[in-house]
Length: 319
Ligand code: NAD
Image (tube, rainbow, N blue to C red; front, side):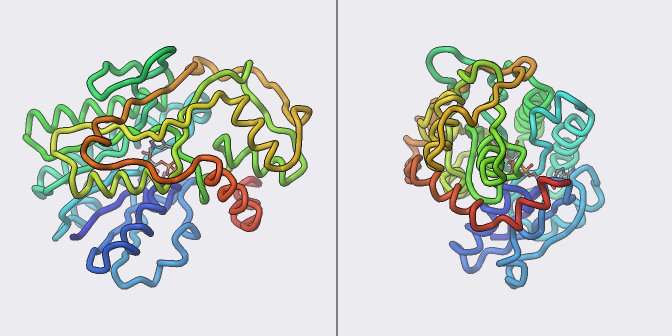
């Protein structure tokens, strides 16, 4: 199989590229990434010389570039996006341009090249907040931030292309990922690296917002599973039932360093901060996927990775 992975120099995309190359010796991957602030060639340094791997610096909004790469490609997997909610609140333009216009360009290129499968990597945030119960794939979208609204817009566009042009589209919606190589603006690496720098950790509002945590390799396994067993026209939620409020998550991280709540600095809440995300991933589980990574062990492995890879995150925190 030949895959076009977009955004493969980012956090989840780089794990996916590595996993596929390690798992399928005969698969080829082209990684198209614009190398925005979150794209980092160092994330794939270990595989950059792999003969099955080609990196192309380019933008998913550039039709000519995308179309030019599609010869012989079986599947497009779109991880490329602007991803940080706080940045989207400060300035939404890049989010609309990449997350909506970029997906539109990819869809048009895929349509003209008659691609066999297009997997759009979306997020639980498109459903918005839910105080009780969990969202299923058929639930209505109710995004709150410019980030989640732009991802929801892309999802709707994908649905429309699937219906109108009978394109073989699949959407994955996962809960919050964590693991090595996550940009240190996101909460877990931000808190871990702050502690390593001797700084307090900034906790939004009352700290009681709930997130459902998923180790990145479980998400990658799920996307691999969907690549091979997923049905065109379907949406799949991906989650591992690790719900914690942010205060519990913070306490857990501090505990791993032997520290207490005096290291927490409460800061003004994020605007329109979703109270709780929760996904029901039984549709994917019935097909045969399930998470395998233990949450606490994965948090420990992630902390260890940031402890031993200081040179990776130090320069990102300065920029
Ligand atoms: P990331 O910010 O770490 O990486 C995004 C990548 O996309 C970067 O390498 C960046 O250079 C690239 N990119 C940005 N704009 C581009 C453009 N116009 N053209 C080409 N490349 C471009 O993001 P991530 O956390 O790895 O997320 C990957 C995908 O998964 C995103 O679509 C995101 O919405 C989704 N997702 C993430 C999470 C999470 O917790 N991180 C959860 C659910 C869904």
